[in-house]
Image 1 (tube, rainbow, N blue to C red):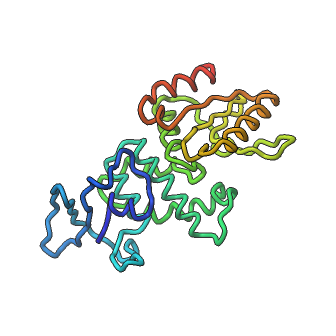
Image 2: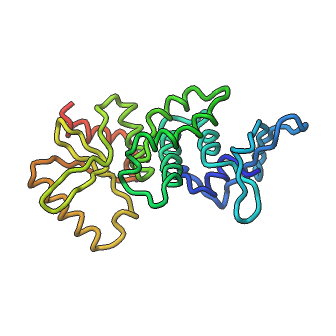
Length: 245
């Protein structure tokens, strides 16, 4: 059945630097049937045990590994940034599946998050998953984009104080939910992507929002997806200076 990076494409789990036109098909075949793992330019074939509940049938009729199993497979042997990016996104999908109309508060509901974490944790109960299991503990569906996940991973690697994600900040103009918030320093961190500000109205609204927060005495530090993906040390240094550490 379809698995790993091909399953990630099906579920919409983020993968950095993937060109789908050049990507081989990834499949997993059952153990005990004489199959062998292989890696060819057009096909990557794994052999592994796959419990029935870790497989689903796509609308097109093919079998594909579940969100939880796909996230676990992709996390195996991956670095912290890649693993956290996948696990954050998977948790968000699984949390959304547990409620009829997911709201922002649902992604911060610890009972709901733990229920979503359970299938991934189960899928990680095999050899070579210790590092992925540790990353799963730090994964959160509150991070809404790969940029935020990559940033959080770099903050962990740098040993910087870790922020709260999507912390509600009341203002006279409503409640704002910044990407990152360091309460002691009253520092807000915003990870900017192309989708986030795809039109002029969104840019103007963000400028107004930022000014409101500055008027209330908050510091603000920003970075782009290109920066955190290509030059993470620049972003980490910028945040460290803003934190005064």
